[in-house]
Amino acid sequence: MTTNNSTDNVISRGKYQAITRVLTASDIAAMMTSPFELIPAPGANKVIICTQGSFQMIYGGTPFTGGGTIRYFYGGTSNDAVTGFASTVVTASANTAAKGNSGSVNPANLANTANKSVTITNDTSAFAGGNSKAIVKIWYMIIDTV
Amino acid sequence: MTINNAIDNTIGNRWLMASRDLTSAEILALFVTPVSVIPGPGVNKFIEVHFWCVILFFNTTPYTAGGPLRLTYSTSASNASASINQGVLTQSFNSIAVNAILLASTVPMANISNNGISIKNESFPYSDGDGTARVLVWYSIKDVPT
Image 1: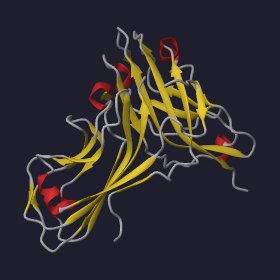
Image 2: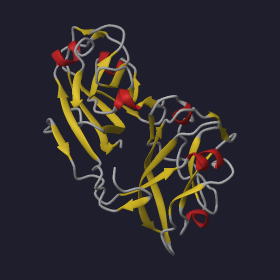
Image 3: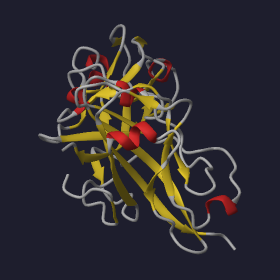
C-alpha cells in the first residue's frame, strides 16, 4: 500500500463489490467436505475483507436434512469471513433467507486471511436428501496488506 | 429469477476511503488522545461511516490491557461506528478485523455536522506493545437535511 494517512476518493485500493453464486443441490450437499468457492484468492499481499453475506434458498419440494451451521470461511482455514447462521435456512420446507455480517467476527491472523479465497461450507455433518438450490451473495473489497 | 453467477462492481462507486497509520505511541495514548482519521467535511455536511478495518503489524511485544476500538465524531465524541474487538491489537502476530455494523443509536445532527472522524479505544489504555496499526475507513459525505 503506497499511500497512507490520506483520503482516496476513487477507492483505488479496492472496489467495493458484490458477487453472486448459485449453489445447486449437489453443491449444498457437498459443501461440508468440499467448500464451495465464492471469491477466488486475490494474490500475494492482498486480503479480501467481507462486510456481509446473504443466503437465499429456493425451495425445490424436498427438504434437506442434517447439516450444520452455515459458515463463510477464508479458504483452507476456519477463520470466519462473516458470521454464519443456523442450518434451518437450508432444512426448511419453504423459501428462506439469512444474512451474516462482519460485526462480531473475531480478529484473525493476517496469515490466515491474506491471499485466501472465501468459501461457503457448513459444520457438523453434510446436508442430505434435498433438491433445493441457493443464491449466495457476498459483499467485499480487496485491500493491500503491505 | 435471472440472477446467476455474477460480479456487481457498480456498488460503492461514490464511497471514499481514508487510511491512517498509527504509531505505537499513538496506540498507547489512544484512550486519552483520539487520533483524527478524516477531517470535517465542511458546513452543512456530515460523514456516514459504512465499514472500517484495523490491521496490526506486530513488532516484538504485544499490547496488553486496552479496550474496544471505536470511531467517533471528533469534537462531539458521539459514536460513528460499532466497535472492533481489541484483540486485533493484543495479538502476537499480524492480525486484521473488520466491522460493518451500522449504528442504530440516535445522534443529534449538531453532533455530527461538519465533524471529522477519530479513532479511540474504550475502557483502559493499551500498554507495553510496540507494533503499528493501519486504520481503513470507507465512508460517504452527505448533506445535512434541511
